[in-house]
Image (cartoon, rainbow, N blue to C red):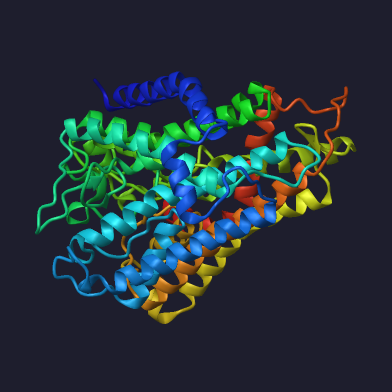
Length: 553
């Protein structure tokens, strides 16, 4: 079987299973989120934290709850790392240095999981079990909670109530992420993923994302939410190492776990707004962008021009031979289209244009299908922008799901779209203007710029993967990338919740003959076009100086 045919079958089988899971898994998440009764374990959590689970919150209170929970999480994780030498199961490791502790705390709380260190030589068991692993769950649950609050904004009318953040957080963690993680862990262990508490080596893994977390039946990180890490895992090899990704079918399963939650969340959206066609339309937009990106990346890696790739049959540098180029390219597309950050091959070794595709995937805003929760609310923001543009084209006040998109709504949506590009471009420019930051680059010229641009794109979009070839464990990079992760996570969340509150207060507008049908193929094509155009207009100058310049040399 040729590599091209194998790659096609690999992608087709993934698509088929995702389609089969879309309805049942989406319905399960919908029931978990909207169930009228609280589980006994949930009621215990509410009593401990002093929350009334039957009370609801306005968008401002919901946002303050998100920020307060996250701020406490950052502080706790920072202190945990700084004091790890005094804790049980520290394995003799000293306290994590302040800059690195700050970067890591922000990284895991913002659902980025960027790592500027090798965990086997830095973190003890307790910090990883009780600090990093916990954030793998709750930071993912925060994203889903915010997405659900936005959907309630569309579904409700004449109210300022968007639900209860604490209820959403607990339900998503206990009813969705934890069960999926446990089941996936059992399957991965059966497939050869090693798990124990060996004193000298981190063996328990959240397989696929490369985040090594010890103790207990902790599951695949992709099952938790498609987090991402920079390096990590055994010998800093991430999911290319057999301890974390032993076989071709575990590789396939990990990609499936990366994609299944964000691709099924549009079903939840459709059911909550009372029109399942709307959910299918959002899923269709995600699918068009994801399939296009995956095909482009696979073709660029399989059929790259050049003496060595031509002789090898593909661009094989940095690729694990067990998986081959096609499976590695599919993994790279999945991990950069979501907020996973896991890698089973080195993106820095990709062809110039192949590496460019991985960057563009993140520059899309990671909405195809994006991170758990963040992908859905990012795509809904793009749908709002598209409806507004369509309204301008026909001279009509734009409406989406019966809600008018006026000045207030478009301001929130525009601020959301502008935040991440500003962080990426300002961060990259600052690094390139600093002599100390440039000295950390392993390569000069366009490729060196690509490494820096990738780092800030990954951090600002809360992805967590790295281009490699750049030493980021410095005071400058730990600080600036940490700020990008922090602002890139919570500023958009504030704007999303502000939009949700504005929509929820509106009175629904009856559909008329001039209402844009947002479930038809025309709308899907419009959103795809708007997404691509916004990305190209924003990032093309930077990309042209980096991977594009290298690719056309």
